[in-house]
Image (cartoon, rainbow, N blue to C red):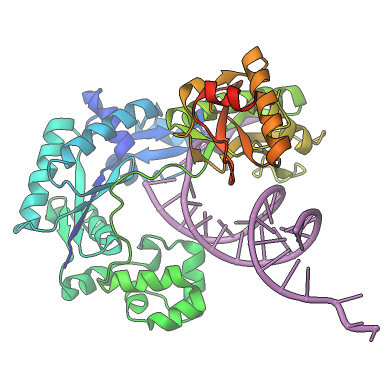
Length: 420
DNA sequence: TCTGGGGTCCTAGGACCC
DNA sequence: TCTGGGGTCCTAGGACCC
């Protein structure tokens, strides 16, 4: 039987802030989202004061002041850096490791005799070397490891480590859980499960899997199996490439001018393009979206998105931001008070087929030569022979092979020869 | 005045193409 | 008179996670 450990950093962002400000030890600390909008992390002391996840800051300022809550703006660069350090310590405790999020990792604990002892050693070394406290849940499946971790965090007497290996232990732990304490079940799903008579984690575990599948779908059936100790999700040892890249921000105040919206779109394009480039990907489409302020119910509401295909060769002067602005023009409606805008890069593909010397600036002699080559090839062999994809570089182009591309080449000079 | 940002997966209808 | 069906893309929305 395989054994997994879920290692979860306690109050991660708040713990990171404490690393460099030892005076915050023992103090209630909260970390705020972008724009200092709402609470996204709380120290135990802040939790004890009743500060909730997602609480808006502007509605809680007085309360925070009254209780001496230390408020920090978020610093994701710092958190990412510390996360990397934690993971490198974890790797010393198991080579089979899945980084699940910025503050969590699943480790295979197969082959270790003293599981709890191994976990305690891990815990103290992470604390010693990085200063971050973690909790460890040990169980045969991811879902049970999540549950075990929850117990480890809650129960003061288990020293940050808890194992759910036997069915008796699992039953005892799940008895204290609500459905929504389970990984993957939130309010809506819990309500739907209630409709078919499933109101507790134990009822879910003991339900007929095929019936659950029929009524609730395959995802919930897998949860039943995982709760029984039957793994349905294995470790993902290598980080899969992103399928989408999103860049968005809320405006500090309502935006009514088109130009202001367009400026924000261009900023988002630049940030998303940076991420795209860093991951060596190309985008096949760009989607732009806007929304009004859903909290202002007296405002007229509007939410829309428009997508522009980037794989069409005809638009030889189109850059990523041109494409995004084209999409923005299609969804722009005057008279609304916009609160949020963003872009998503879609249909991402690895750009390893694209050699760096195939990248060139748009509107340059090289790019125009490239366009002539493509036109010639496509005229001769059909328009989809080669496709052009906007690159991650703003104002740059790269080549991506089409579905049928007998003339595909990764060499710039070859390509120019093909086109005559 | 002030309520985050970045992801995944799924579903469904309409448009459009062949 | 009988009036297809499969596939893909786009838009929109739902649900969940950290």
